Image (cartoon, rainbow, N blue to C red; front, side, top):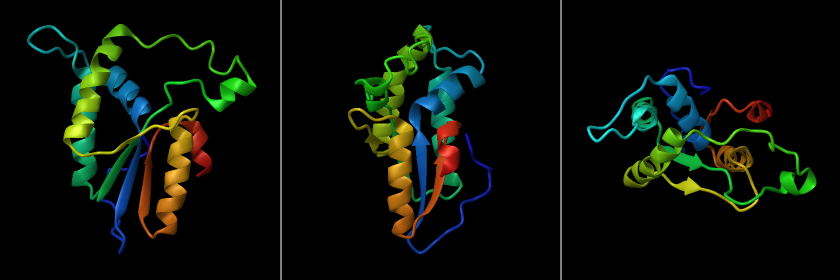
Length: 150
């Protein structure tokens, strides 16, 4: 994630952290060592995402928003059916953790934004632009190279 670890600079309107949710889940799944609940369910991504969300608040986030890819095909796939067609499916242990992570986001009152036909980076770009226009200091929390132009 493109975060420095420094406390967020406060502005009059506040500080917003925009999360590439699936990117964060993948990063934590592969970056945190194996962990399981007492019943054997994998929990490494759950732990890593939760720890990261808490850290963002500790660093000064006034607002967090979790952007997610559309469950439906995107407009890019309509243009090019081969777009991301060769990506392997997510590991089953990662998929088992996603519903728990979504429940944690909900419990922490972090809005989850998904829009049919769009990817998380499209949502991040739109919200970041609008938030900056309203005077918010925005942090993009993503490793997605498509967001570098923002």
